[in-house]
Length: 191
Image 1 (cartoon, rainbow, N blue to C red):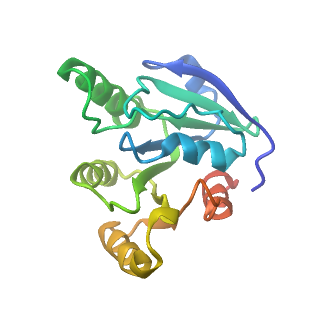
Image 2: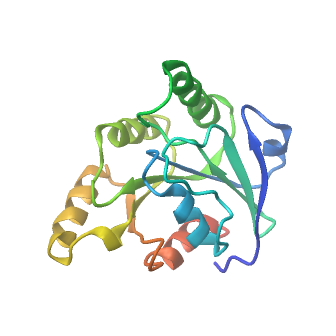
């Protein structure tokens, strides 16, 4: 599907009546340095729509974007960041869990963004396990594939696929836009 418009709507720190307006929701989640913001910008074709930073863990709210005036893209805070107090980490964990598992909101897809060069970390596998237990429709994006040496690519992708628990894996590069059409079709088609 071609993305013709993408607009930041608001940042939220809890339930919001806007989320009950019937538009499909696609959630984006991943570790703090997995490249979620760059992925969002390249996916929708709007540079700087989602703010990127050299410092992981700066997103502290649910960032809501309206895509083609018909879908919500919900950028969740990154999990597993090293900096910040225990209280900050607990707030982020509560915000993520509240939206995904307790709010009653239905996500059309949940995109789990991983750094393909690193592979799935323990925290990625924990998140995938939670999403699977809650029967979420998960798509795993193996981001930053342009950072993998060509000689390591096939082995690394096999490893990620083996850990994906049967979920679809889409190799992706925000820099080269490899995987962008496939991910767009997967997330925003009218199925």
